[in-house]
Image (cartoon, rainbow, N blue to C red; front, side, top):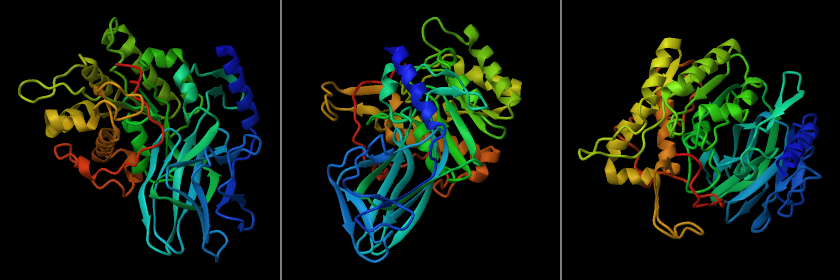
Length: 440
């Protein structure tokens, strides 16, 4: 069965590699802007034509008259998802949002709930254009000539993800999303930040789980930087190699790109230690990245939510954070000390309030969730967002070259003064699951 699936991925990928990469979609009614593809409330995804909505129930096409492109739009009372078959690569996507005779409010996420635009509001009659930059990937490993040389060994649960499916999927969410148009163009110039890590970094598909990696795109200027998140739940440095995830990156990364490396939680499992290959692999990855002209950045694993009697965070990661700090000095590479910043952040929240950043929910908060969720390792969207701000703060404070690409969405952050959870904005997606991610 696994071989059949792998063959299917390779077959689809071989078709996609030479396929169309630019699109112009006019969302709305029957009137269509010249050179645009008409998208109506009945445009259900069809793999033969290569685009459409995943679910058309609840969609509404509204036409206000006037300009063919901006005078009509698609909206819904629930989140809706638009997918396009695209070859692997980086893309700039321009979204035209608003209503000629009303207001709108739109949050945009892509693939597995990767945050792009948050709470974009337009006044009555206002139309805005917003650009996002997205990395689309498949599981095929190609060399520089585009030849297939291998495949990433996906876990069974990953075959259901929206980021290994040979599609770009855009989620339109919030109180009143109104989409007039979507255009897609390849981006060959942006710096790519490749993220490697575990369940605390991965683009988590299901509410209420979330990780800092999927919040990071929100804080970078589109067109200049694209986030490519290759992290996966349960992974160690060794497993990342064994499943060929890192091989996928080695064959894609370009001079000037970045490789963020955060491992520790799962490497700490029984039988593993800093001396059991962790240090050796980290140094090998650093050397390889440098040889390819890329910039390695080490990220220490954040703390677990474990407090002592004095309301101080207890280190439950043994000597893994220290080992990464030492290697950063030895190899003269950047270090984002998320371990230290998370200690400050969680202690500022306190033992009780910090639960609001983790997956702590009473029974029946989510479908088929009969038991209370009380997880001291994994984060909800609020906690993931706060950790992402810690990462951005470190980039800015250390004056990494990436700091010039930080967007205006980042307004500074002090881990000693966490954002109030009551002010955090996150309209939930339709995908929900109470099953804990892989890993520890």
